[in-house]
Length: 259
Image (cartoon, rainbow, N blue to C red; front, side):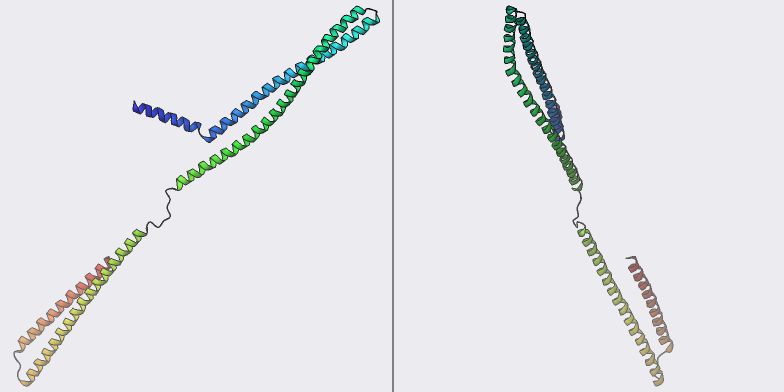
């Protein structure tokens, strides 16, 4: 039941919104003004018709009065005073009617003229209100269009709302670059240490070789095969170290290229 009444309220509110729509209200007002003007014109026509009837009655009474006067004159010429007297009595009644009609006709003419002026003013008012209604409807349409444009533009934003994403990306890239630089620095230090160790080892081998030659010269040399074996082992160790260093360098370069 509650849903039913809610539905009825929705239908009623929708109908009221349509009735209160400015365009509908203006159209209804224009129709009402036009209908009122038509009705007033019809009443004016009826008033003019009645005035014309009074005018006809007046003209007929005036004609009859003149005719009775002529008839009375003709009766007098024939010596018939009684007949002439009857014509004059009827003429007096007609003249009385004419006097009564004069006031009524004058009032009717004044009323009709006032109605004509009122009708002209109303016609001018209807034309003015019609033009005003058209202007108001145009303004209503413009306001509707402007409101529609505003609703359409509500979702637009021109603020730099993506700056946070760019700042975060720049920070991450900077961290990764710093990490890569640190790794390069560490790797370069490691290579330099290896090179220095190799140089030290080579210098030790050269010093051992010079020492051996000096011992041989002084007759203090020990077994040569042992020294040669040591030199061979040292050389092999150096070669193996060099191979390992080259592999590490290649792996480091591949890792940097992948980053």
